[in-house]
Length: 255
Image (cartoon, rainbow, N blue to C red; front, side, top):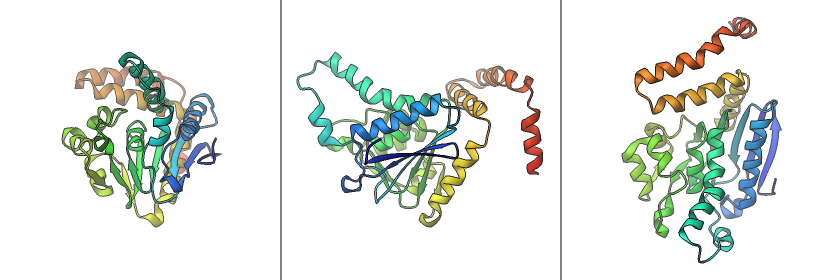
């Protein structure tokens, strides 16, 4: 934990709050480690059901801390060394959020740029306020968005919008919802309450089944319809054949 990214666990939800407002919540190494540790705990601890990543201030994040990144980057690296460091330092950090078998939610209350948007592509749910704004400014410094901003964005929003973002244009909250980048947009005065209610609904659903949903959806995305049906049968067989009576009773009590 760092003063710029604090952690709280409440009601089955691990909450990481970015709070480096003087730097527009630019993501430092220490802030990324707080998120990494929360992902580790989400994976290992049975009491944690959901990870929520949120922020304070005008920005969700302006992206990676470019100054720090430049300072810690070794000079004169070979291309193989660069690729290895790239994967270990950035790609692995984001990939783990995608692969953990519990829901990861990002609550985006303002501009979410660069690495923040790339990180959002790896989480399960992107919820935003009407003031949210999305962009990939990497092109302005002569690079492409290379930590999911290209590979994940095209899967989430399609070729046209991926090019729009990748070539430096911005996307507002309503455009992001229309494109499929975010699942919900709420007014600022309701945003925090709606996000928390959503996280609580997830936390109260069967954790193991949510993990299977995550895996099955990812598998089905790359399969034809027949292959997808095979995945559904394989995944559902042990779930249906086990004793689900306690879950059925819980649902019936709600009606």
